[in-house]
Image (cartoon, rainbow, N blue to C red; front, side, top):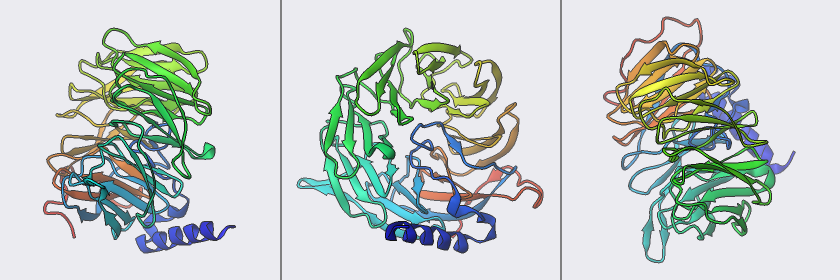
Length: 397
């Protein structure tokens, strides 16, 4: 074991001890390194959820928190609208915070954060990727070749690569994770507001040209493009699962595409609104939210409609935790049964909350009121489920 891996394991064990017995197994828990789980953006969390959540801790940032927190190695990262980046441990204790600056003044993040290895990757309003040491916040490198960036970067740490798509022209950039040097860049694909996903063999994303683009993750060689129809513009992320890509469109249709031959396996057109959230997909279900204010569940293999559920606002990208869907809509967090959409719990948290991050026995959301709130899954059988209602008003301290 290397010295650095020893200290990482020791730190994870210390955090688990501090959180107490409810977080047993935390050191082995999966991370949440992107806004939608792993680098494939499938939105699937490790383990299973109990029937209810209970408030664990809160943290006040210096402005609204509008992007989902990310987490790895026992650390939680997020930024406020002020531009300040925060890192906490999983007990809610601040480890560091900082702003980014260049020679002309402060620089704000413009995209969801990414953790890759021990690096926190920040996409900025000036079209740069900035790598920070995730433990200390120190700047490690900067890549400035993107011009503009809106979608989240992703990574294949086993290849030592970070991927990002330039918003202005849709070119996919691959950057060396260690030092930020450019490795390759594809031809432009057209304006892209969405986020790429990778399974370490391929990188896939959709764009405003109403197509799904697939590239080789090692070389950037194009694997092909799949037309998504006249209203097939994509502004969310692509979820990759089991060799397939799942993507929502402006017209409300969700596509499932076989990545080996770029064949459309199925489409689902339940929604009457835009689907700009990133679907969450496991081996049984695909779930997504739409601008018609509803969550939808479909059979992941066939695309057969299973259920829909009103949420009273536009749902953000959902997470799947075992057989439970966790979905934020407006300021409310909904827990639904993945099989039939049955409501399990609803918590009114703030006027506006982010999509959830699920890590180390916690579900964490940022709020438009500047509060970051962490909830713990109640142990199954520990008591009656919590009733729906207000959460943390005023915030717990």
